[in-house]
Image (cartoon, rainbow, N blue to C red; front, side):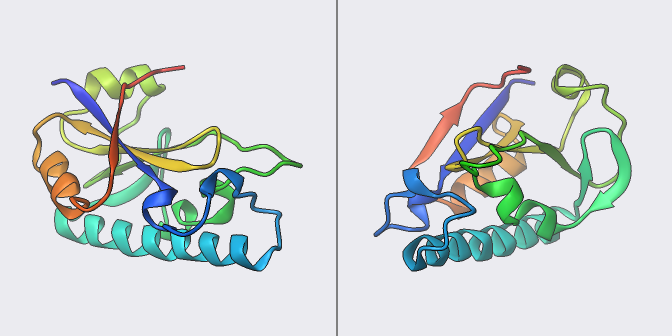
Length: 155
């Protein structure tokens, strides 16, 4: 099945703030407030998504379940001018499947979701099978957001 990426820019959540300047080390009150909104939104959205599809969160190559708070954290969601950002991927699935990397996930997965952070720390991306129930649910749930179609890349 064709994989489709649904990119969610944080500007959909913080409408009155230029999210290009989000830096997890910045203690400016407006920046902190926006990051808190994004973290709270991601916590709620992911919890609802997991409940709807009875999924758990796994690292791409580890059977130990991860937590919603691992994804809805400053370290995963936002860039740091001092430290940069570590690009990470999580798999939302009913049970763990071992993947040797992103290329293996693309070929072997049949019905789960890959969540990735953005190298600029300004968006979150959900990769799903095109026209799957997950795809339809995410786009319906986020119908008021401006969503970006993001091509799947193994780089």
